Image (cartoon, rainbow, N blue to C red; front, side, top):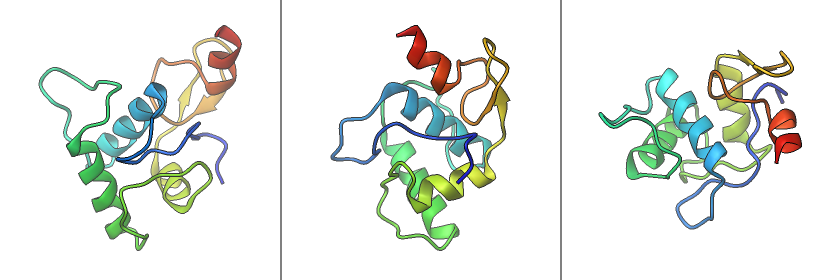
Length: 111
């Protein structure tokens, strides 16, 4: 799996989700044409459009269509393989997800 893009916890309709994971997934889906950013912008809250985008991405990529992304799972791996990479503004490491955001290592050290 690419080390450039990782989520911390499972994303699904019946899961408690990590705000940073939601932002990363929405941004990755938007970049790939599977999520349309609302007029008020991308929020860290899961929404129907995000889950629909996950399901369409899964269907289009021959994955189990369940709207769930697990850390290290097939959907995360496929999303990472198709996502652009960004540099962490603190350490300069490349990561997937949101441009201008800290990489997971720097973010965990800042907490």
